Length: 172
Image 1 (cartoon, one colour):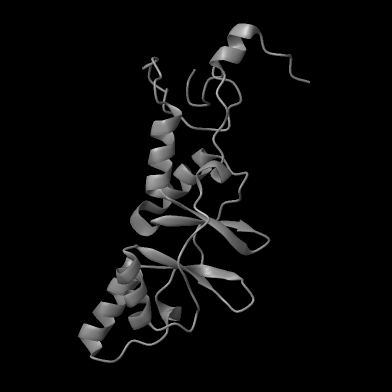
Image 2 (cartoon, rainbow, N blue to C red; image 1 turned 120 degrees about the vertical axis):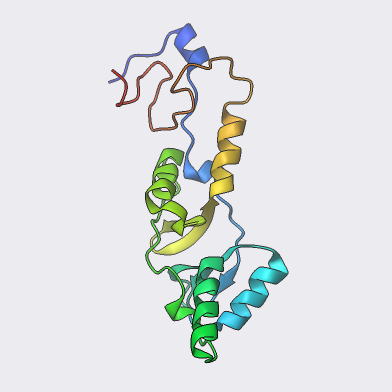
């Protein structure tokens, strides 16, 4: 059982940011049968970089992004064949988050995958309930630390730490 924080600790404690705090609940959706041409039209019309691939049973299959479009363009230019459905061009296994995942889990997933992911799915029982983008993480971090006066190293460490006086595992 954790002791009740003192008045000073209560003032310095910050709530841990969760994915549910920053995720987008509105996102573009395409089906696995959608053509890459129609995906391109959707992304251009909505001025977005990706769409969720959802089947008729509302099951999440992955994301199709501008990266997938580039692969389709390469295939088209090299082989001069029409590009069909998106099945060959979307990431079927992006790292998935839950609404209770920490924002640090999102950061780690983005960093581990490099430039491969522009957005991460937030799933509940295999169904897409939200999307977190890199910009959502940056915006939330800036908002979270707005007005913070402490500029010691480690201030921007987002994690599942429960109190501000806890040290990250990499600090001695």
